[in-house]
Length: 319
Image (cartoon, rainbow, N blue to C red):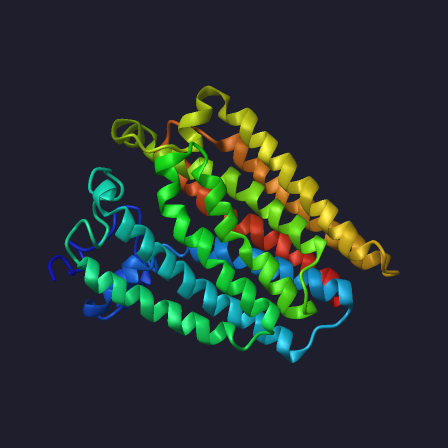
């Protein structure tokens, strides 16, 4: 395997000084880079809708058990593993495209650190461990977890046939809102569906910002994205996604907690869309689509936006 040294093997858009490049055993680094362990933001963005769904569910039922604590922990481990498996699948399908884009040609497959066969084996290992965790949940949640493989499988191909690949990413990345709600309640409910839709709007917001980094390379090789589609109208579209995410989350909270008698929990939970919306608005004030470094910083800042929403839902669950 070539290029696994700390210098040669680093991926261009990895977090500088990340633990993979500094501390991981050298033989494991290409596989951890395939899983984006050197870029943890994706794990957060996959995990946070899970925590939203779990916390909204526990707030609506008024109970939080040890099994709910395991659901939260299991979602965290599963998010790391399934994000890793999904990114590995994405890199397998995009290996030719990645080699043509400046930001991605240093990834493990196009740079020769890992073969396609090795990547497939790594993807299977991550998926099987994640499936073992899923089996500790109830049957409805297990069924939803299996069904989530469909959008995960389709997403890498979306940019080849639609200008809206970010929708497919949203479908995959926010599935945890449905799964975690169901893992607590035993069945899927409309609040979870509305929360899922809010997450999709949020994903359209942050992943359009992310896509601005590659807009020139994408145009050259014919890859579609909302960043290319929106062009000069991008800010208006992003404001629309902001409003949609907040309104849908408000509707989810009201539907989940409105019938309950705990007004304090409802007020605290409504702080979630308020905090998310203000953080997204802050991002818009600092956005420069022509500055790739700024776009990457703002994209990564969405961890904090999602955590703020989770904090308010956790407070609502605690009262």
